[in-house]
Length: 170
Image 1 (cartoon, rainbow, N blue to C red):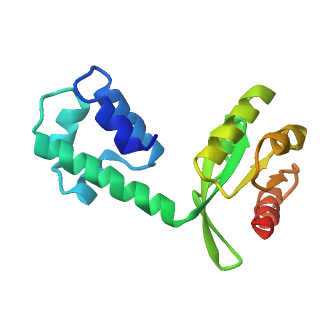
Image 2 (tube, rainbow, N blue to C red):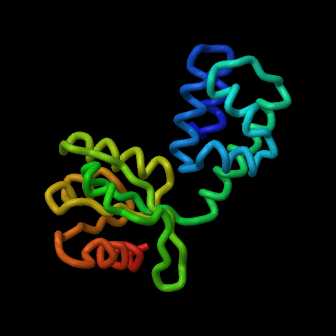
């Protein structure tokens, strides 16, 4: 389910502000930047985040802005990176250029084999073009998804090498 759809489903419930905050985190966009993109005053968005009443016109602008930001995500091919949170924290960029093509990196934190498999299935459903993961889970993941899988070997530049390998398989 798309972010703007989740937000609309939460309208009228106590979960609206939580869902809006979650979507801002997923889109990796601070409230101030969202304010500038949406042409909604920061003070109005601050009220929305703090569970104050707001106009329907504000809701429309929020939803339309989220739709626009989601479309921007769809323009680039996505590569899933499934790893433990400490490893994901070392990734310094969300976008990478390989062989002249831009890719959006989508992080999927996982600490167990089961979480890795579930994350791989979610990633494939979300339309990623490939998956990068640890060698210990790669064989299991390859059995449940239809996208290319590459492994991260813990060496210098291993992450970039894994991305180049998986891009060559796309």
